[in-house]
Image (cartoon, rainbow, N blue to C red; front, top):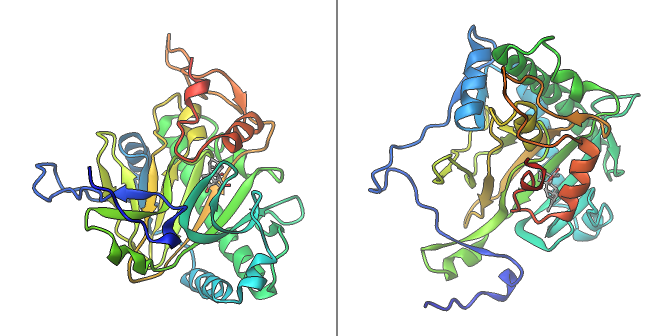
Length: 333
Ligand code: GA4
């Protein structure tokens, strides 16, 4: 057995055996991220196909203004570069606010710092509602950005309904556009991790540990730094090359249940980078706490794979779980 001497700064952070990269001689076909042009014809079928086979896809032709994306990235970089005391004044994240290295309430850690924000409310569906942010320019940039990606999430959910033949077309999207829907927005900053050089090549450092997202869909955008990996259905972990101009849509547990397991929520994780900072922003579209999460459409003789629960029940259970747990297991029939 090889015993690793961990640098003290990594004491709390778990290490990963370096992921296998497909095409490295293992015989597996190289993986390329499915891409869907939401403005093109056939988008609904392509969205459903990607969500069934992989649980995620990249959106091109999304219509989100580059200006809103660049503005938020610049504000985020400025926030994370500000004095530690100013950032700490927005934390600790429990669950909302500024957090560093600790994720959730049950001992998960990662090589990152982040802002976790609640958005929405009757007055302004895409505005930050909590916590109070130190800079109004950051808050305005989040409001503008979230307004745009919320539209993208809505379009994706409409495409899913159309592709699956669920009527009406807004049966899924209206779950997340209600004024009381549970929308969360997260900005992650993964600083470079120079300590990686002191570890064997076969090891990497966890940025954000493997997990599935509990909501319906998540919309992720990152800067040009690599780190995100997803698990394919055959168990291989594959890197998702960063693309500053695209958005990645990730199926969450709730959408898996609403489609009775047809669309797959996908496990994903982030590994730390030795040289460059990674900044990602993720919008999580959840329903209202009272929303029943149960299959919308069952075929003739098809039974639900899950017992019925509300989003409020599921969220409560999620916050009692560890990041890597399979949170749907206890709800399976
Ligand atoms: C994973 C998806 C989102 O980032 C998140 C995370 C949340 C948190 O960071 O507070 C959780 C995690 C996420 C699922 C299990 C619990 C809750 C951390 C954790 C260990 C904001 C979310 O909604 O669920």
